[in-house]
Each structure stands twice: as C-alpha cells, then as structure tokens.
Image 1 (cartoon, each protein chain N blue to C red):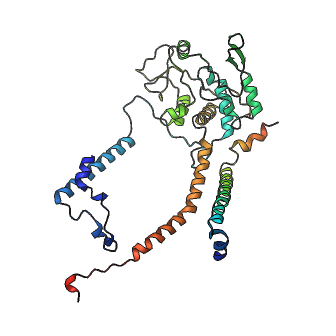
Image 2 (image 1 turned 90 degrees about the vertical axis):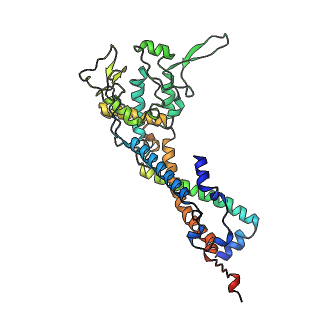
Image 3 (image 1 turned 30 degrees about the vertical axis):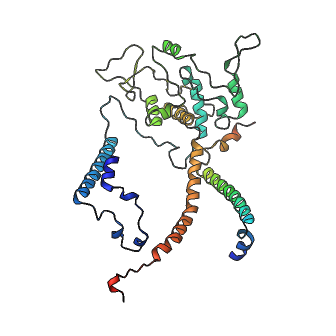
Length: 310
Length: 57
C-alpha cells in the first residue's frame, strides 16, 4: 500500500510549495498536472478499490445476520439513550435489589465493591448495613488463622462460589459468568441481556435439549444453562414499584449498565461541557483563521517576463 | 474600554499572567456550574441527588 502510494505521489505531497505560487489559481497548485496518464489511471483504480472495499465492509456490517441460529434482540428505548440522559438512579436502586435477591444466587459481581454503591444507589449508612449482612474471610490473625467477619465498605461484593470449578459443579457444568462487565462484554449488551431474561419460551420442533438446559432464542444455539428466573412478582420492591417481569429485567439491566460503566453520568455531563466549550471556541478559531489567511489572500505578486521589460 | 483593559491587564507580562490564571479559574468554575445546572435540568428526578432525601435519616 505504502509502495503504491509512493509510486503515485513520488513524494510530491511532502514537497513544500514555492512561495510565489500563493496567488495563482488553485489549478496551478496541483501536483497532478505533471502526472503521466498511467499514473492517473493507477490512482483512479486505487481509489475505486478502496471505496469498493469500504462499501463492502459497510454493507456486510449493515446486512441481516441470519447465519447463526440466534434471535437478534430489538433495540428498546432505554431512558439513558439520549446524548445528555443519565441513568435513572431509582432504577439502579431497584436493580441492586434484584441482583441481591435473584442473580447473586449464582452470579458474582467481582469487580464491584460495596463502597461503589455509596452515593449511587444507597447512602453510606445503608451500604454499611448491607455489607455487614455478608460474612467475609479475613486474616491471617495473630495465630495465623483465617477468620470470618462482617463485610465492610471496602470489601468487594462476595461471590456465590469460591471458584469456577465449584460454580460449574453446582450448575450442571455451566459457568454463570461474572456480571460486572456483562453489558459491555456482549454486542448490544443492554438489549441482549434484557431480551435474554424475558425471552424464554418452549423449544420449537427439532430442537432437543439435554437435562438442565433451557431454550432461549436470544442465546446462541438456543440451549442455555440458566432457567427462567425472572417472573412477575419474583421479588417485592421496597419502593412499591409493581415488580412485573419486564420491570425487574429493566431494573437489573440498568444496574448492570452502571456496573459496566461507572462513569456513565460523568460522560454525559462531559458531553454538555465539550459542546459548551466548543461553541465558545468556535468563533475564536474562525477569527484566528481569518486573521492568519488575510495576508495570504490579499497578497498579489506580479511577474513580468524579461522580454516585456523596457 | 479596550485601551483601559490593555493598559491595566495585558501590557505587562506580570499582570497578563495573573489575568490568564484568574480568568481560567473563573471560566472553568462558570462552565462547570452551568453544565451541572443543564445536566440536572435535563435529568430531573433521575439523579441520586434528587432521590437521596428519601433515604437519609
């Protein structure tokens, strides 16, 4: 590629223009005037090829992906989709309830500590109380022994299983993934997880499932090791929100969205800041450009050939 | 006005430096405050700030 570019341009791009060229027509700036016909054709072919490949990649990306035996989740209108929209912290609080009462039976949240919840879903006192409900291994103490103590703010959220082997042994060989980055870790994560949680149905004819497998059209090949967990009224929310299945799934997905993107609200705020600063600096940049170019655009050079001189 | 500003603030390097530092501080604070206001306006009722009074004792 670089070799072809070098052939086409002969490093003409790197040559500085002569100062006297400044007030001539744009045509005279062009380095393509001296090019041979073959070189122009080569360049045209290169351009067409590059454009064609780009178009092909774009078309493949946009095309209907119907090869895998998997249903593609629809795009829901999440409340946090707007360019300035933050996460709904009421929903995050309910999402934590769902995780704690439902998901945490099998799934860990290894990269989140109790202290992360402070000021996001709960007050400091509430989180201290939540952490104290868990027993955490600490040590070694004076005698070298490990002991259990109530959780503190600085502890990470305890996992349901001590290691992957224990998790597999307890779940028919299927490993319940850690949920901290599950939204970012899947393509179209929030819609995928929501559809997965709410999309269980009976397997169509021809699909056989082994013992301990459940059919879910949004999971690749359909056979999922996790049974349907989210039902209407599966938990009771402390704030009185009706716990329909879609509400529960929505809340936990919003919570996991926050777990994957702890800086989410900060990012949205930064968008406003960048736009504001851009609007202020735009006139300054325009003024500066005009200031610098005014000499260039107003300079006139006159060349009189020797034979015309007196 | 422009003359006054030039003579008092921009003419000497010392006052110019102070002008830049103080100006940066005021501008940055102002932009932050305005941004926070807009952000809270857009997301009224969704932020922790708006719901924490329900849970604080």
